[in-house]
Length: 314
Image (cartoon, rainbow, N blue to C red; front, top):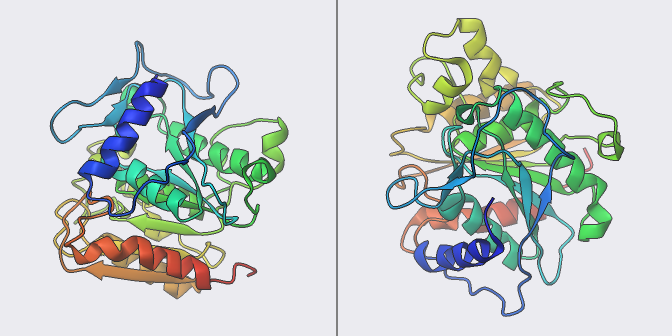
């Protein structure tokens, strides 16, 4: 498990190295962690040994070998009543904290949102394929049940995800009642449905021509049936009751090109669900907050404006 010292140091590094222009408040509260499950999590499998944090390279600051799924809580000094659960990407074999979920959490915290980084279990660590989805549903329920404690409104709790984390967030938004686990404690008295969803460079489609992602391999294997591909493709799960959803892509993304978000946007639109799509000219994949000189670095402000003007009583 990541130490408290590691949490603080990684949080500082994120702001410095990701080009975050906003200053961290001097009295910003130190992140705390909330386990999702009492005892061993539900589901089969799991890793052995301690958690791993990626060193230099593409996986720098990414966590894997997760046996204790949890929420890392970033409380603002002045809560605005809204909360966002953030799912970093990593192809369901690691979670990009340093360059994806942590920068977004700090930005949201500075704007008054209560941000929760979701450290979820991974199929590549030996967990069954439903483990990350059970964790996401459980996280939504914990945050909603404890809303008053966090100073948030129980009907203003959204989910955000990047890449594979975007797939996880999207699935949770579209299929919040899918039975990935059974439970009967107090958290199971509330809904797992997010009140809004924000998906950044997400993996949406598992079918050709988008059948080359690590997400697809981890979820359905190398030679899945068409039924399996469709069962995990978000565009096939869109329905009228989906929560308001905002989608972000970069045109030059080589891993999750805009076709993923276009497919989901079209499916949501045709179903009559509220959706908004933004495609930036450049940015590639895994851009986190983006760099200050990039147009896509405007996405947090666009997201904030989108949330501010929404009426969630629908």
